Length: 314
Image (cartoon, rainbow, N blue to C red; front, side, top):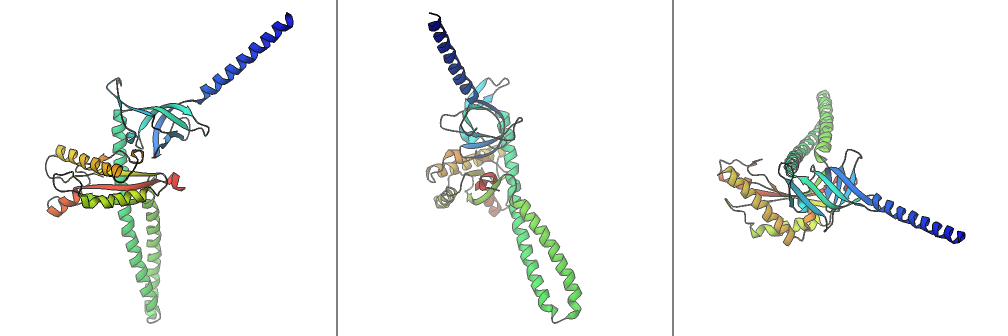
């Protein structure tokens, strides 16, 4: 009887150990993460937290995304994944996979935080556009300086008196080249994305319908994007400054949404690869709104194919 009791007690203890072990494993897999979206490529996001450098969060079709409204965040609106933009503060609940990545079950964020993130992204991409324009101008200057250098070298054999002048100009060329190279590196690698392709679609006055002639151009951009690892597509809608600011803001939003619809339907682009479309209204006018030509340039949607520098291996 004593031996039988000991065996039963031993079996009971082993069962408890097994249950505790499984319970510990299940608990260890539970994940709660809070931080800023550092970058996003498709269904993978890098989250900057206060306790660790970065955490990878994975999205799937079952991930529930809710936007919190109201003074006490009492209203919880279900939204799509395209609202998860870099710079947004989020709270994630899910489980860890074998690679210590968080598979998201629910994601929550405040309405005000989403507005702040969109403003930040708009400023970042405006800087990128200006950087690329500066890069092109600096390259042209470099080519002109190189041509001047070759001309001075040819004159060296003909006029000895010009040697000192040519040496001074040569030194100036090298200084300018260093400035150009530094600027190219700075403007070419702003933020965390490369701009690998860009298309601009123009619209008629007061309209948001896409000209059928532009659809092949959008499809070509979509095909190129799908060849790029971890790509993301940015869509920004604009309007000319003619008319009511409120109407123009709504018009720029409809234009951006219509372009996004073409990319989803005709271009076969997944919604997880398209960042939340930006309704930029009459900001960043590139043409003179006092002329018909300038107004036509401002009625536009700019579409860019982006790739994270982390994914590109830089």
